[in-house]
Image 1 (cartoon, rainbow, N blue to C red):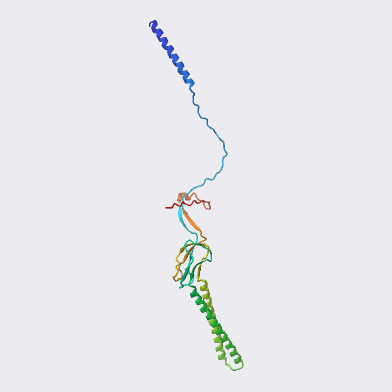
Image 2: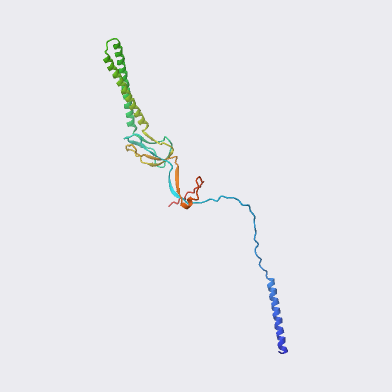
Amino acid sequence: MNISSRLLGQALVVVLLAACSEAGKDAGSSPVPGKAALTVATTTPQVLEWPMTLKASGNIAAWQEAIIGPEINNYRITEVQANVGDVVKKGQILARIAPETVENELAESLAMVAEAEATLAEARANNERARQLREKGFFSPQQSTQTQTVADTALARLNVARARLKTAQLKRSKASVLAPDDGIISARAATVGTLTETGQELFRLIRGGRLEWRAEVTSAELARLKPGQVATLERPEWRGA
């Protein structure tokens, strides 16, 4: 190797060292991004109750439903005062049944009682006179027995007339169909002009307006429920057409 070649090699080495020195300076001047620090907070453990949400389905029905019908038979309905959805009170009139027919029967029964009372009074008076005459020897024992029998028969007829009067009074009190309890009318079959029949259904009443939801869940969800567990219901949203 000659001198010129050796000098050229030394020059190249100096250039390379200078380039490496400049590259090191540039690398050292650029900032190195640092790692984010983690923060830690302390807390006290607490016992919390987490709500459990279950989806259930089932029918909504009346808690107790009363069937209301007429208490007298073969009478015409003249007025209906309640309809489905009406809120009624105990003793409120729901329908009326032919009052004129019932009033006529009551008046007839009163007349029969008055007639029977007059007949009994006359029979007892005749029996008393027969007793006095028998004591004086003017009447035979047989005649006294006959007058006593007539008085007893008159008393029996009076009792029958009074029983019929009570029946007529009871019919008059039943001429109005009344609500047996507070509630909501859920069905109505009563129509003006129809005749009442035994066992006929005129109205249905939801007692107290109380409804009952009989929820049904799956067997897997049933194991998560306990008797007496408190539940909060969310009614479904109504979406109109």
